[in-house]
Image (cartoon, rainbow, N blue to C red; front, side):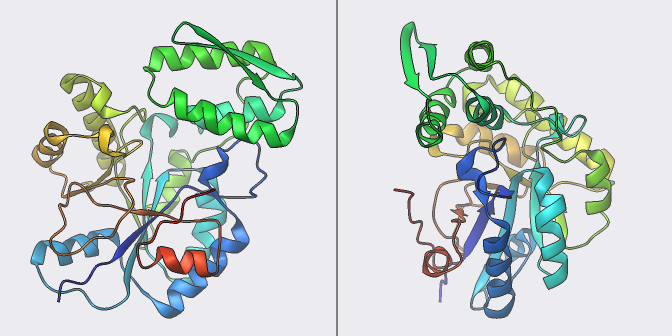
Length: 308
């Protein structure tokens, strides 16, 4: 029987009103604990590496298998999620962005959320592709919509163009870096690496969309991350997660590159399940909803319910 199983994808475990994290990346602390309680009691949670071994062997997996992954390396993984995972003995794979491990700074979409959330201005004027766009940010409700809309537009821009827009927003809002630690550093990673429940994978050095880079630039992004992590961990990194991770964000040359660099598998953010016939360099995942009832249980059978 060719059973299908789910790889769950988390980002941040925090207060859903947290102003300095992109809102759709957050699962509340209470919901996360309920989810892990359910997974520990009702499912067979295996590490991503163990799941990959099952797929490589071609053997049928046991019933109710699920793997857990965390992208980007938010500090709240260490402060909020890690204690709960330890309490229940649940393994997971963490994909940190290595350029942020020196400083604990935020990613660009989190900085975008912070600047808009904290702004006292009523409007934003943004020049995108030579066209001036005006956004109403006069209330918290409309701010949430603007953060999502701008994120969708900025994600496809080059790093230079993206930074230009962020600089314009900084000038208009009066806010820039939130001056607090948002992602883990090498200090937290030092503690995490000692626990066998936590596996560390590569997520590139600066979290750029790889398909938008030259092959040499992509090699630099991946190899820098891999070398830094392997030197720090004292062992190979076999698992990879594509930044952004949609269909347009990777291609066959990138998959071939990962194979040549010694990676055994790569995770996407394309919704779906995995089986023993799955392409290991296109592992589909389900983004975990901020919910601990039927919506979450739907995700465990590979149904991704979209935010309305």
